[in-house]
Length: 239
Image (cartoon, rainbow, N blue to C red; front, side, top):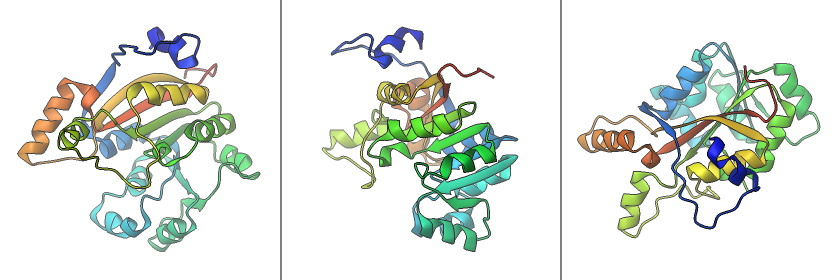
């Protein structure tokens, strides 16, 4: 990604940059990729809650991401500002969750005490008014951890098909769409250095239409449903 570093940091400028991102494509859907990446690691799962009304049903059908990460990681702590979600998760038997505002005075000490080697921020920053400040705070608290940040992709083939019909399909709690470049730009603002960029489907599909979509996005990963980036704090060790 050296060729765009100066644009990410603002040292260079273009009002029409023809950026061709190098995206590693995965056939597996987002959840499967993340479960593989956290295997055997000590993981801080930021924004674990999902939408509260959906937690119980997703736990029941085995699709709730925090449950899957907990089963794969050596240790997994979920944090969220949603007190109701924490209560719901604990009522379902998940004790490895807590209510935490990362900007609160006690947060830094608590995060450091857990000692995660991987900080996972999956489909969170599109909900935030200032995603760079959020990631910067996490990186300052946990400077030696690897970061994995995922977002829905603004340039996904699904979005393009919907746009042809004059429709935007959107989670109404989202504040922004991210492309590969703008995701990396926000990480740069947070002091995070991207190590690799990935793309995958949002979920598995056995239908013909879904399989065709997966084949097309694997052929041209800029159309992926989800973008995932692995990153480290700028200047930290690369282990």
